[in-house]
Structures are given as structure tokens and as C-alpha cells.
Image (cartoon, rainbow, N blue to C red; front, side, top):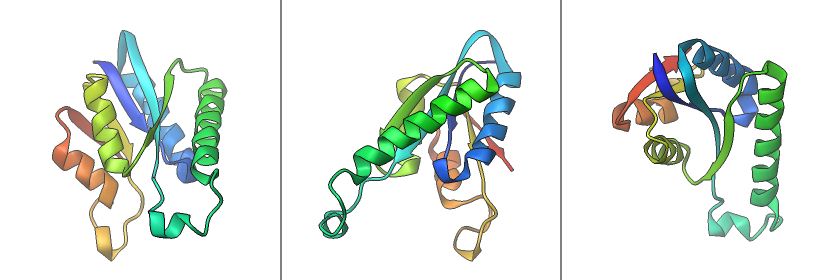
Length: 136
């Protein structure tokens, strides 16, 4: 059905990400590609002063290691990518860079501030240039 599927995964909710990753495998055309993505947010300068310098670099290494472990655990072929910046922007940029024809984004149980599908998922749905599947 799809040739390139982007699966952004929040490391703190890797179980939801695994579900989305497995769903991507069922929707992928033969010879297609799945890209697992984690976007590490930059820390504002006024906050970074009080934090260790290597905090972001460690988050990048941890994200990559966890996505690799997920790929190995499932046995599903995929490439792993780490982005930086606001999550929605990183997801949209990666989708455009890779010419993804589907983004599968997991949605959490929302609170009142983002009641319908979650702030990041909402931004991705509104601004993506390809199809978006919100995995509940």
C-alpha cells in the first residue's frame, strides 16, 4: 500500500511506538521502507545553563539505541533516524526529506489542553503533505 512509511516514536512511550511500527509493517509495499524516527527537543538556553552539557547528546544516543533495540526485537527491517527540535517540526521535516507517503503517529490519552489527538499528532495531521494515520 505504501512505499515509505515514517514512524515517529517517543522514547518515553516506546510500547505505543512498537504498536505503530508493527502496523507500519503490515501496510508496507514489498520493497518499501520504514523509517523509525525520534525527535530530541533542544533545551532552551535559559534552562540549559543549569543542566549538564552532554544532556542532549546523551538523549540522542539513548534514542538511537532504543530504536535499534526495537528494530532488532521486532525483526522488522527499518532505518533509524534521530532529529532535533520541536517534535512536530522534526516529524514533518523528516517526512518531506524522505518523501514519505505515510506517517503513522501514536496518540496518547489527551488532557484538556490537547483534547482530541494530542498536540504533536494534531500539528502533524494539520501540516503533513502526505497521509497520516493516527494510531490510538
